[in-house]
Length: 218
Image (cartoon, rainbow, N blue to C red; front, side, top):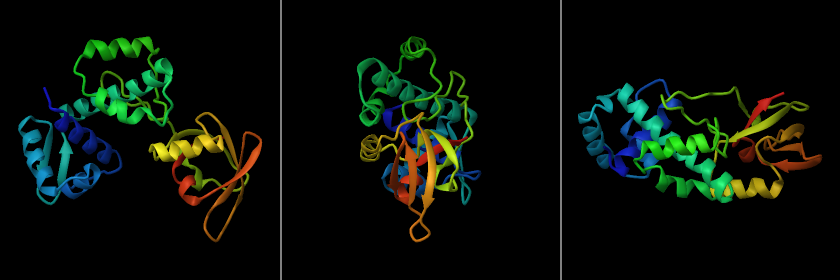
């Protein structure tokens, strides 16, 4: 059994490890969780004692197989709760993250399995992120950042790199949503902003926005 704090650390290390082939540094973990490096060091020792991770000096932290599966299960619960909140309780996609952060620490395997079945075993959460299965496996799809598309290239919106409420609310105002087709109409050399066509309407978005939208190319 793990505390909520221990679960948050495992989840953070798991996310960081997806973007790295090397061990994760204590500073990277501290930045991810907005905490002190000394607090990270203490937690690493606790989790190492529980066979959740391995720490090597100058090489950083790597999760054990047990640690990976435990972290993936926490993420599975989080993302299933997000789907449940949107589909069954009429939450919007910008409201669910903080609530799911609380619900993910519920320990009942039966509850989450029943929710999974009730929802029809979804593969993705409302933000386009894959939901791990019971064994911790992720069904990944090939995707690119919108910023990487060239003029006249098209794609389907499949995810976001930034799931903050302010960003998601901005997308709602622009009519940008998962499943929508996007075409790049023009790109500015000066600031890399781009004009895109979505919902039969042309809009201009910044490079920052384009670097936070995932597209599956057509």
